[in-house]
Image (cartoon, rainbow, N blue to C red):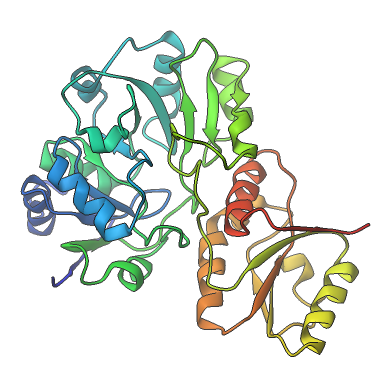
Length: 349
């Protein structure tokens, strides 16, 4: 299969007569899979009502089929067809955060969406992306679009069209190149089917921001546990975001991290380090990759996947990463780093 690449300018005021996006929408209506930019990462979209279309997502990604997918919509009116029992909490979150990097788990209407989207659950994860290209594609297709991140399963999520092509060229119908994404980490997933809202995956909207709108929000204890039999949300069960070399999270001083680096290099290993602008010149390693500023964790979120992908071109044997406070966007950053590391930690005693 030849993967088509379309280049689209995000700053165009109107997409109403955009022939490239018409072509993309037509492919989606024909149950093909197409990657497109959102404000979080690039998504791999397909008709969420079609088993055949959704099966192509799993096939292209090499993704386990018990991992549910997020359904993307362009208008809140689309919810009527897809879900029932919309709680007051869900309505408040929708009013406040959509379009944006928040996915809400709701009770699905039976016999509308493909069972492959919901992985057999009675719930569905839905969001409205805050990206003009994504919204226009969904509008033109006139379909709910299932769209996980457009990468090979387990690899770092793509924040540029080139990342999509690195992983999926020849495996999907096309990719819409709308430049780099904004947030850089996936959406926050909140379950609104229980009495109290619960975060199943931290992301672009923080716990603190959610609580300002709806009061207390819980964090799913399963975030600490990889032994989930049936995940309700993407990103809960499997190792994700991993570069080729093993990643270790290091809780300790920069001097301690440097000791670890020196020890491995003495053994002939090539060592990579994930550092910040504040510690850029501290480490003597083979590759020091800067993932933003510790003083502004949004910059770390924005470049994290880029940083992880970079190591695949740098021929390293092992990667040590600094760690970050688990509050605000730091919770999402550490969630992704823990998955990239397969929960491998080194603590300074």
